[in-house]
Length: 81
Image 1 (spheres, rainbow, N blue to C red):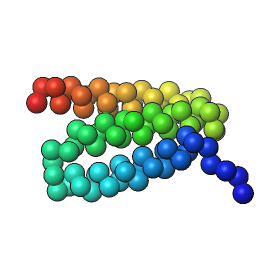
Image 2: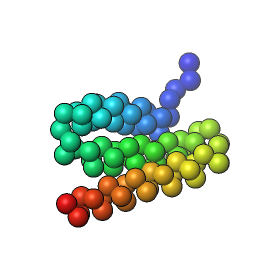
Image 3: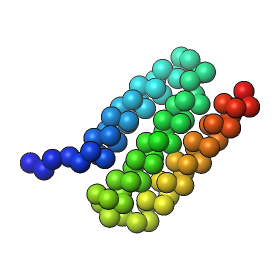
């Protein structure tokens, strides 16, 4: 059985935490921005894994750009209140 790399383990843990955060966000709307930041980080880790593990160049850029945009927009909303 092949061992999972650290990047895939981190992606798995982030996906589980994101799922939990999204469920909690249904009850506490104030956590939406933080859930979006976590989603952006998860997408960045997915981009890394696509580049290093799966060698898929096209989706790497898409995941990275979308992840960064989500993080930037969430941080701007947090700063603006």
